Length: 314
Image 1 (tube, rainbow, N blue to C red):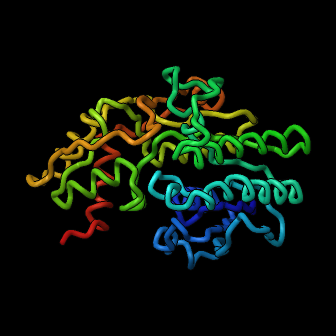
Image 2 (image 1 turned 60 degrees about the vertical axis):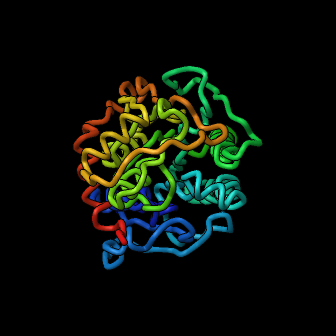
Image 3 (image 1 turned 90 degrees about the horizontal axis):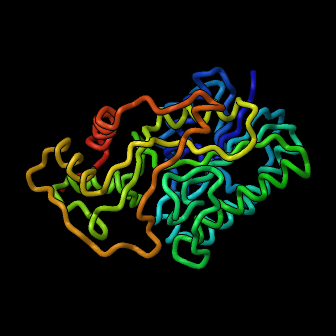
C-alpha cells in the first residue's frame, strides 16, 4: 500500500485530498497544527484504519516513521484575513516548512508536491495568466507575505529538484470553492454566502468589476491527482476559465440564497487586490488531459447546502 503525507490535512483542500487518496487505496498521513484547519473536516476519517493524524507545525523538524511515497505540502494560511493576521507563520510555513518537507522527501525518496497559487502572478499585466508569466508582485505590500512565501516555495522546490534530484510537482491553484470552506476566512465566496444567509450586505470591494474564476473543489482535486502521478515537473495552472465580475457573482449568490434582506454594498478596494484573474489551462489540458467539469451553477448549489448547515443566524 502506498503511503502519502498531506500537510494542511484539516484544511479545506487538504481534507478533500485526504478523502481522494483514501478512496484510491492509499495509507494517508494527515498533518496539521490547526491554526486555520478544523478537525471537523477530517472527523469522518479518524476511525479509518489507513488514516493517521499528526498534530504538528511543519515549520519545525518533521519526522514520519516508515516509507513515504508521496508528500503533498498544502499547509498554509490561504485567505487575506488569515495571512494578514499571521504574517510570520505564513512566511515560515512557505519557507522553513517547505525546506523541512523537501528534506524529508529527499531522505525517503518520495515524490514531493507543493500547493502554489495564482497569487504568484500578483496583479497580472497579462491575461489570462500562463505558466511562463513571471508575475507583478509587490514584495513589501500587505499581500507580499503570502505571495512571496509561495514564490520562494516554488524556487526552493525547483532547487531540490535540480540539485538533489528530488521528484517534484508544482500546482498553481486558482480560486477554488466547495464544502468545508471556513465560514469566516474572508474569501469572497464564504463571505457572500454567509452574508446572504444572514440577510446582510454582500461586501463588494471597489466598483465590483474586478474578476475571478471559480473552480469546484472536486475538479481541482482531480487535476492535482493527475499532476502528482504525471511525469511533468514544471508548474501547472489548475483552475476554471469561466471569468465573472464580483457584481455578477454577488447577484448569483443572492438568487441562490433568496433572502429578501440580503443586498449589495460597496467598500474601498484593498491594496494590491488583483483586478483580473483567470488561468490559461492549455498546459493542463495537454499534459494531464484535464479540464474542469462541474458548472458553476451546480457547484454553487452544492456549496450552498453546506453553508446552510454551518452559518449561524441570530
